[in-house]
Picture 1 (cartoon, rainbow, N blue to C red):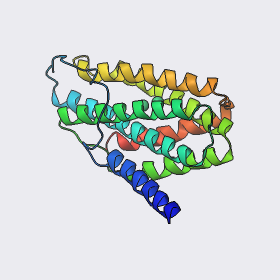
Picture 2 (cartoon, rainbow, N blue to C red):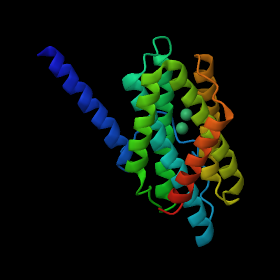
Picture 3 (cartoon, rainbow, N blue to C red):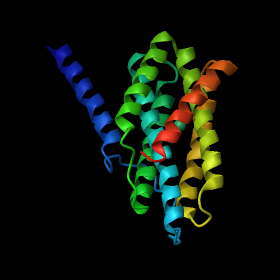
Picture 4 (cartoon, protein in one colour):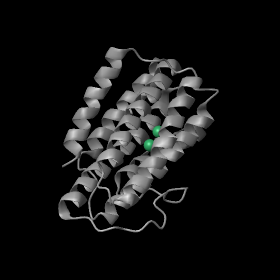
Length: 213
Ligand SMILES: [Fe+2]
Ligand SMILES: [Fe+2]
């Protein structure tokens, strides 16, 4: 009886995470938005659309991070680092919420493809976790590296006037580098180049589609 109840509780908790990730404006950040009181400078329509496309990509990246950590949390053992991983997942919620807030400010929307990317990333996280902690942590490190590369690129191509988006991406880049380092220090495998290439191809598919859809 008791066991059933806790399993139900767990299911509700998992479902709650899915909803809070996929429903716009549902994620609550813990830390204040790094854009703070920075002035909203005027953007022309082309610039606004470009900033929206980039922030939508970053938002979907954070949806994937939620799903990856959730899938991993269900199957991985991670006895020593579970607390640290949960802290990293919390920071990802901040990222998700900040990107969502910025999309609203830009009068944009989140991607219609998010449920799809959520499901795929959950599967990858759960599979990696089931194979073993070394692989699962290695996957976190490689993903964070990939995200870091996107963030650098986006900070360069954002409209010059969009200081609010840039401030958010800057803090995210600091956090992601820290997550990658944590995962490696916890014993994550360093993935060989062909695996990394596969991951970067997958992320190209994501960024190309989500920029518009
Ligand atoms: Fe993140
Ligand atoms: Fe991260």
